[in-house]
Image (cartoon, rainbow, N blue to C red; front, side):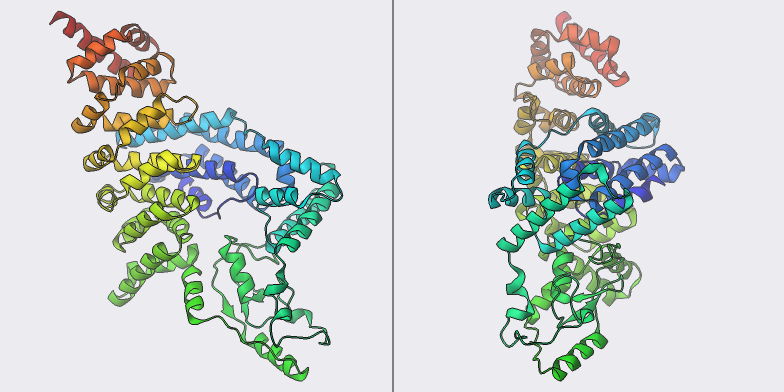
Length: 574
C-alpha cells in the first residue's frame, strides 16, 4: 500500500552527499502526500502510486548506500533517475481523481500543489555545482593537490571522518563487484581520489588523540600484537568498552556511538541496516580482553566517561524502534509507565535536535499523532523550530505539519507559539525549510484562530513579496497561503491594504492553471466585500484576463472569474 511505502521512505536516514538536496526534496514531497495516502489506504486504491513510491524508495536507498565520489563524478544518470521517478509519481497522481475524494478543499489544494511540484521536478534538471566540478578535475590530475581543494571536496561530499571513508570504501568495493569490475571506466580515478581524501582527513583530524595508544598509562611500543578480535573494526584499537549492535558485530562503545550520532543506521563492518541502535555490553569479550592485558602486563585504561556523558548518550540512543517502544508503553502500559514514556519523549524533543527526525517519522502514523501531542512534546518541538540548526528547524516544521493533520492539534500547535517561528523559517530558511514552513502554516491556517495569529505575525507582507519575486521560487506557496487567509475577514483587510490587485491580475494573465485559480479566488474574496477593490481591479484591466480565464481556466477558476465579472457589472450599474 502507498502509506506503508511512504512510511519506509520517512524512516530513511537524512540524506548525505552530493545528491542530498534531490533526496530531501523527493522525500519531502512524498511526506506531504500523507493525507491523500491515508484516503487511499481506506479505499484500497492507489496501486500505480504504490509502484511509483516503491521506485522512489529504491532510488533513495541506492543513493544513500552508494558511493558519494561516484555520484559526484558520474551524476548525470542519477539525475535522470530522479526525473524519471518524479515523472512516475506525477503520472500516478494524474490517474487519481483526488478532487472527488472526501477531503477538505484545503487538503485537496495541498495535494494539487504537491502534484504540480512533482510535475516540475519531472522536467527540471539540477544545476551543476561548478566549484565542485573544478575541484574534482584539479584533484584528479594533480598528484600533490592543494589541501584546501580536498577539504572543499570532503565537505561537499560529506566525507569528513574516517568512518565516512570506511563506508565510502565499502560502497566503491560493492559497486565494483556488482558492475563486474569496471563501473564507467573510472575505478582508478575514484580510488585515487578516495586515498587523497583519506590522507586529508587524517592530516586535519588525526585519530591518534582519540585512540588508546596515546592515553596515559596505555600500551607502549613494546606491547605484543593485539589479537584482531580484540580490536574495534572502526578505530582498529584495543577495545576497552566493547558493545554489540543488532547485526551481532562488536565495536568500541565511543566509536560506534559517534557513528550512530552522525545519522548512520547501518553496521559499519557488515553494511547491514540496524534493526535498532541499542548497544549491548559484550561482557564476555571484555573479560577476555582484561585477561589478555593482565597476562601481557598491560594496564587497560579505565573508561573516564562521567555519569553526565552516559546520561546524554542514553538520551541519544533512540531510533525509530526505540520510539515505537515508547509509543507502545504510552498506549498499553500502566499509569506509571505511560507517565515515564511521555517524559522521555519530552526530553528527547528538548535535549536532542536529531530526535525531532524520529518524531517526524513516527508522526506520519495516525495512531501516534495524539500520543505525541498528549506527551506535551509540542512546546519543545517549537523551541527547536526557534533555535535549532537549519536541518533541525526543517524537521520540526515538517513534524508540526504532520501533527496538524488532526484538527484539534491545529489549535494546540498554534497556541504553543509555532506560527511566528514558522514564518521566520518561511522567510529566512533554506529552500527546503521554506517549503516545509509553507505547508505547515497552510495546514495550521485551516483553523480560523491560526489565520489571525499568522496575520498578526506579519505574514501578509512576506507573501506579497514572494508574489512579485519570480526568482524566489515561492509564488505557488504564496498564492496558496493567501487564498486560505483571504477567507478570514481580518486577514482580507490586511491583504487589501498591501496593494494586491496588480500582481494578482498579472498571475491571472500569465500564471499556471493552479496559480490562476488561486489568484482569482483571492481577487473574488477582496472584491466581494469592497467596492474600492472592484474599481482597482477594473482599472488594472482585469476584465479581459477574466474573460480569457472563463474560456481556459479550471472549473473553480471559471466560477470565480464569472463571479468577479458579475461584481464589476453590478458596480458599473450602481
